[in-house]
Length: 243
Ligand code: AMP
Image 1 (cartoon, protein in one colour):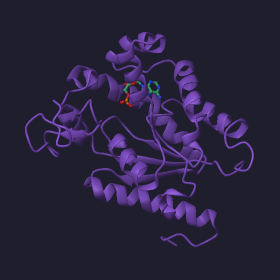
Image 2 (cartoon, rainbow, N blue to C red):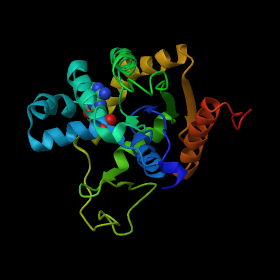
Image 3 (tube, protein in one colour):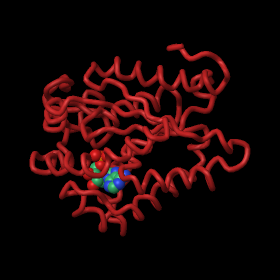
Image 4 (cartoon, rainbow, N blue to C red):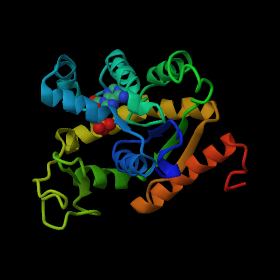
């Protein structure tokens, strides 16, 4: 096992508007450090496909681009975070998305999570990925994903080698139901109204770091890794790279 996937990392929270690249970055960071990516959007979509009670409650809300009620999402996140693979850390992608969810998460960390040996070590690293508004629209309208392996493409900036087919397994790529233009506008509005305050919440607590999400994917990952490493260095009492 390399040091990269044997030590505790994060927890890491990625915030940013839809299309900022949270999912793409979360996958890259998850792979690098061997910790799970927890995407509330993915878990909800999986529930919709499986037709669970939660999926049936969430389906029409998601199709409109609105947010699923806090209590449903928080319960879902609580059961996911209690799974054993989260012990060494995890990346939250798409959660918290309201100020109430952020407050709930802090209380959850404090009272329940990392309860014994890790108590006090679970202040999350919060990274906001900032992207220009017009870039966001291009990314969302061009986004295609593989339902077999989860890989994300973009017809404008990261097209597959063969049109509409996944490079990895050849499956036909799909456009997410909520990546239609009229729903995109609704999702960006939900971000402005409900999720921006989440970044403000963490900023007030001095826990927010921003990275430039307009750069190429690898460069954004490099910035995120730098933040994680600086954070780990500070925890270990070493000077951070920027110092
Ligand atoms: P995403 O894949 O993160 O863009 O999420 C897709 C959709 O799932 C959102 O537009 C919401 O309807 C729902 N969703 C995902 N995460 C949350 C959350 N933390 N709170 C409420 N709704 C969520």
